[in-house]
Amino acid sequence: MNTTNNRRGRSSSTSGTSSRRRTFSSSKPGQNRHNSGSSRSRNGGARNHSGGGRRGGGRKMPTFNPSQFINTNPVDAVEEVYTPKNSFDTFGFDKRIVKAITEMGIKTPSPIQDQTIPEILKGHDVVGLAETGTGKTAAFLLPLINKTLKDFKQQTLILAPTRELAIQIEDELKKLSSNCRMYSVTCVGGINIQPQIRALRRNNHFIIGTPGRVLDLINRKCINTAHITNVVLDEADRMLDMGFIHDMRAILSGTPKDRETLFFSATMSKDIEKLVGDFLNDPVIISVKKKDVTNSIAQDVIRVEERSKFETLLNLLSTSEFKRVLIFGAMKHSVEKLSRQLEGEGVKSESIHGNKGHGQRQRALSRFKEGNAQVLVATDVAARGIHVDDVTHVINYDLPNTFEDYVHRIGRTGRGTKRGKALTFVPLTYSR
Image (cartoon, rainbow, N blue to C red; front, side, top):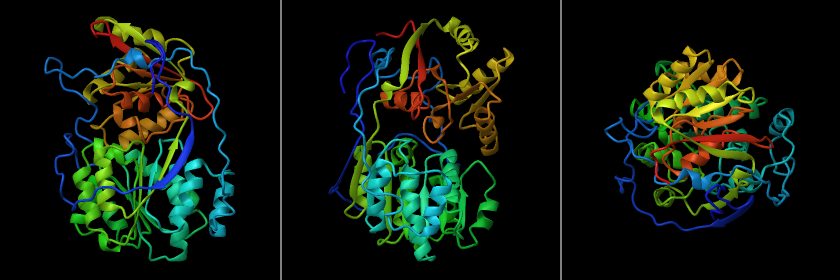
């Protein structure tokens, strides 16, 4: 990636796909116990994951210069048009699956679906390097549903970093398997564990959950990992960032060695390479890169003094173009405080952060999706796994910690063929 100037965004590679087999270094499960410095809770979220500590205690400022990644006038690059090699009719899916796909209005496979589905159907372990919005959920669900229809003794465990993403995966599973007789359960923290325990007494073909809650249920002997035939790790890089590496290792180490393992991540760090080397068998590596995020999102910085920061935000939200706005804050308590301040000024606002219970987060998200709230204030828990249509603006009220966090945040707008705008508040005291 190259920075064109101080006001232009970085340009990453245009869309394309590649697949290959790759050998990873391997070691015994349980080694490398200090890969993650962040702590995590057992309720499916991360403790203080939103980044930073108290003022004076010194929340670390980002190690990157936000101004270097700003593209005020994005210009669409000419993208390579991907031509699928397969269709949903030629994958060899059960006719009930094809019917469900047709009813959902899905016509052609996305690149990640086109390349991963045949490999999964062959029983290969797969590493899919893909961002959100590439169709990866259906890429692993469709062949696993087909596999289950051929053998109802199959049981799939899907791990996701957040409650919201786990719930969305089960929602999509229900749509894609609407014509099939399949059972599934979502196991996430922040809600009463007893209904999940009761649901696990039946023969569930799909168990979807966050690592902390799933491991809790395994320890309670409610999930027998010996029966797991397929494992999916969705957004594995995010799970590692949230400190779930030890839970992931504990869960995977109890599953049969001959399981099929599917691994999806946006990045391939050394920690992820080690996890892949430890738990996947000669995987097929498939990489799908989306177009540069700067091509559809106009970005800018707003330099503000701390004392005028909130007033500046109010002035922005009072203009008609700010219809559905996602605001990112650094810490849970500051996000909640900002949401309440906005409500006090007559701005309909909701908040999502780690201190909110499952029901509270779902209600907040629903109100935002349905247009009953103009603003959703969130920590980075919402940077991935939450998909809301027609977000007009993303505002980084507090600076993200890394460039990757910046990209994930602003990627909540300008999705698909839509255009979006992203604004980043930068303190006047922050050095350029």
